[in-house]
Amino acid sequence: MISGTLTVIAGGGSCVISPDQAVWLATGARHGVGSLLGAEFRSLWISDDAGPALPGTSPSVFTVSPLLKPLIVEASEIEGQPDEDGYAGRITHLILDQLRRAPVFPSALPWPRDAALMTLCEALYADPADLRGTEE
Image (tube, rainbow, N blue to C red; front, side):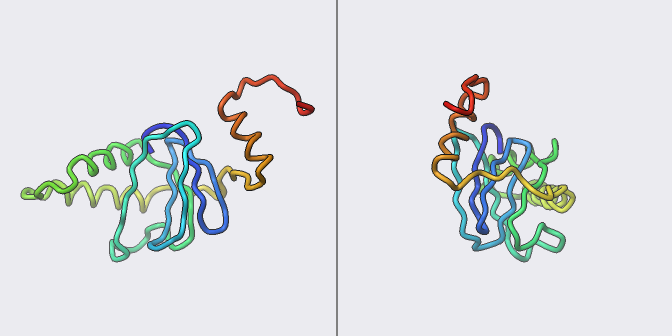
């Protein structure tokens, strides 16, 4: 993700991710993505035969390294252009290497499913300095 905050629903759970995080979803995983206040993000579509040691079949949240983010942006900018000198292939290999090395979070910040709690969380997200008490 480039900026903003995303909510990702997949695998029976939901989470909120920051620009320094990403979610791994296996091919064909049913999911939904939303943004509370707008976000700019990129999606990578990786073939199942891209190689071993990618995060796997379960949804997982991982840290996006300082190198991975610009590699993803570069890959999106050169997408569809001829790869006469192998540059796009080298970018792809670096992205895959970074994904293999990315530390997976043991858990991510869950986003509530209860409508009332979701409304409260959205209000706090929009204005974290809100000084109202629990009664309000």
